[in-house]
Length: 419
Length: 164
Image 1 (cartoon, chains in turn orange, brown):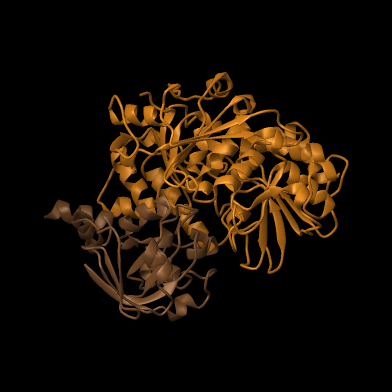
Image 2: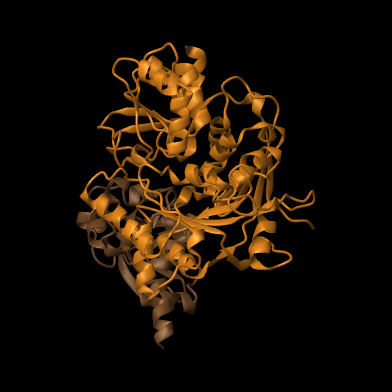
């Protein structure tokens, strides 16, 4: 019996020839990360344990991205804790405001996380790097502290579910629509404890930006990791960035899957996930006049260059509807720079959208776009739980940058075809 | 390890934003976090919960973010144990690492109502509902995990072992 890509990566990092779902293994970690919310606790645990050294300072990134630029005194104190720790331990990968980005957009862009890696991050959306063909998963701060000290952690090998996407994509359907649709089919615990492996001719045609979007939301179905077998598209992306050697793994033809689900993407329209669950996804055309007050285009899910280009394509020659605030948040400094160079900012400014420095800010109701009671937002983010973007009586509708831009122009939830 | 308290019932898919909203994550002080525990699911909870009380919920408890602040807030609020039909994986791991006992039982999750008096034995996995004279069986917590919980979580546990 063969192995899946996830099983092969885990076996190699555990020094074993073969692993099976359910097996408990100890693995070597290639890269670890934490942010301004999770690192303070990890650093506290690191000190409590009496540790003095990071297992390898080149394999740890600290990225203040959630509540930066510091939103209040408490946040400033948390960020300072990371900064002081990074200086004390000579960490080369501490990313300060002005040089930073949202962690899950930044680390692939900088070539710090690579195909074939085991990546552990104190942030649930660490699963994003599965889009590169890595095994990447979120853990809590205490688990991360142990990795910071030892460079190792333990896992139970997950069973895999294979998702096969075939057929022809309809206009305006993106990676975001495919993952929202998939979560809608299986539910928020449909892949709990398991691997979501995304395959098929449609995935092979997707750009890296879209693949990262898909893997990013595997956690929203409860998955341990999401993964896409790397190919030439991955190689082209990685070769110009990689800061160390990487390895491509694939899944054997006779690998064992707990379940195989096949979707004909020709049936999938642009999607919107209604609050309060990412699994409440519907075709945008099925929604009647739902007025909105805010649009967010950004986040670790959809703040990459391609997302901004898509938003600009729709916003060009239009204005954000009266009564709507449209915030655009490029996910990293490099994306921000490229967006300026390509003239996207002019389009956004002429459309009367606001542009922010990179931050997770509004996605988790931190700052930069908090909702009042009764307000409704369309966001390209990943969670629409109660109170996620502000007051518990506000609402978040999840969608692609195309649907978000069209909604901003029309002042109601709408698809690009409604323009 | 034996625990007792009254039940607080919640539904399925209780996410970490409901357990501790991100707007309060500019601190990791357990006392501050406890003041907002479960706030967006039940604004009265943090005010009315008593030491030893038990959270009882449906499937996929703790889904969403990896924030360790979630089990931390629950523990600091005085809750002695969470019983759910199932747990999201990061929350499950974080709970033991934090020293927060958790038990999985579908039947208990369905049957127990808010206000029921519960007696729990982690070593046998038995949940006795003294209000309804019913007993439910969960997977027992193995001895080494009970020791981990008794130490107050993974780091204190490892340090204790290093000292002994």
